[in-house]
Amino acid sequence: MSDPVLQVSNLVKKFGELTPVDGISFEIRKGEILGLLGANGAGKTTAINMILGIVTPTAGEIRVFGKDLTKERIAILRRMNFCSTYTQLPGNLRVWQNLLVFGKIYRVPKLKSRIDEVLEMLEISHLKDRVSGNLSAGESTRLNLCKALLNKPELLLLDEPTASLDPDIADKVRKVTRRIRDEEGASILYTSHNMRDVEEVCDRIIFMHQGKILFTGTAAETLEHFQEESLESLFIRVARGGEIEAKEAISE
Amino acid sequence: MTFSTIQALVLRNLFLYTRTPVRLVELLFWPLVDLLVWGYLTVFLQKHTGDSFPYQITFLIGSVILWDIIFRAQQGVALYFLEDVWSRNLLNVFSAPVTNADYLLSTYAIGLIRAAITSLMLAILSIVLYSFNVFELSWSLIPFVFNLLLFGWSLGMISTALIVRWGPAAETLAWAVPFFIQPFAAVYYPVASLPPAIQWIAQAIPCSYIFEGMREGLKTGTVSWSDLGMATGLNAVYLFLAGLLFVHVMKTAREKGLLTKFVSQ
Image (cartoon, rainbow over all chains, first blue to last red; front, side, top):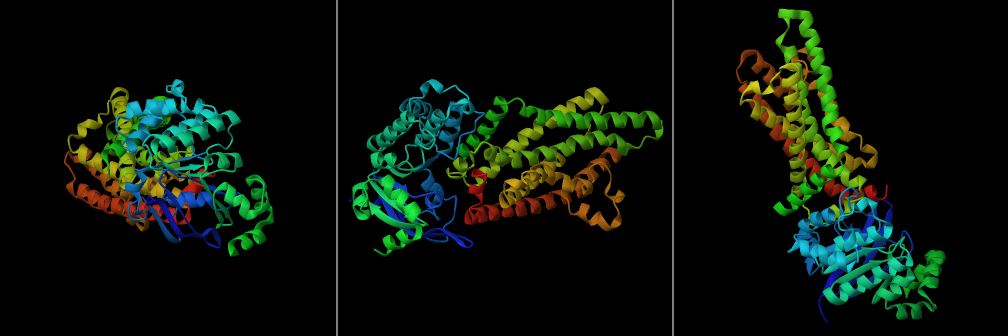
């Protein structure tokens, strides 16, 4: 089995009295799509922000490509990328201008042809000269994905990439995510509130609740463990059952 | 530190200005208003005082131009950060392989470009409208102007650090910080005009030596090397301390998750 691309060990983040991430450990192997599931406030985004180096962990260790993130952050970031529904590229720049800027930051070789390639992959080549701020939500998400794919990342973090998208565009995003893994060998950490996304895209899932990991396994293993018929009903049960459910699961 | 990263960050800002001409209003309009107000005040005073017109007042126009160098350089650094906040691009930048040095050097470059555009426009207009040629101050102008840029960059770093530390509500500091300094900076009047009890504040500000030195230069035609030396020494200290503050605040921001607050505002 290949070495893990991302290895998170006993990761903790405290903000004063709050502990949004409370001792989580997991890893992603090469070419794997790992889903990070959990209700709002489960700690998914804080975990992603720590993996990106935007938030410093209170305790624990993050190793990416075998390297310590705190010591080799810049070298690691060159080989990974990120796309979130909560961020945008500058709206007053044209699509190609935004991609040119980030391509240079990530030192992408043969940048112009790579820009054309990612635009084509996301089916938005016709928007190349459009002002980014005038794109629809779906087009804007696909532009963000283009930025995230520019440097052919070996590790890609996707934070709710299909939020607020119509089913057609969401389906395209899911297909592209699988294609990136299949064709470019990327390992992907994928968060979503859309259970269909997770079932369709992820090889394994991590179920988080109140900063802790409740369960890790494939979708089928997770459903079997919790004796549920669908991830959606499990999601609702954990979100509503709250602490008792979480404590039971963790103690197991 | 990587040249291509700095180049990319500068390019992003240049695209922004060419794509959004309305931003030139901020770069050209307000300095022009200042020049017209202070310029015509100077003309008015000249007409009414005749030969007894003091040389210091001639320098009012020069002061407008030179103060604007500080202000534009400071804005170049501080607004650069806010542009990313406003466009919700902040996390894209800070999750990319961008070091503190890359980030700061690109903001300096933008500050330099902004200051060059505005001061050149003001210098040309002051020749046309008031026959005041700031370039007559000879080559000594270059080290003086460079010192103003250095001070503007320091103020910009301090402004950005305060905004990061105190969050989106502190955005107005991007415009306010230079004006906290201005009353004590001897821009339009000499340090001696200040009450003795607060002259020490002026003596701790690098640009007060620049404005004092340039007034002296205009009066005597000589370069005040002692003022230039003091300004350069103080600027080195300010740049170092502002850099330390910026790095410290960015470290704190990562520990407290402050950068993510700009995204969820």
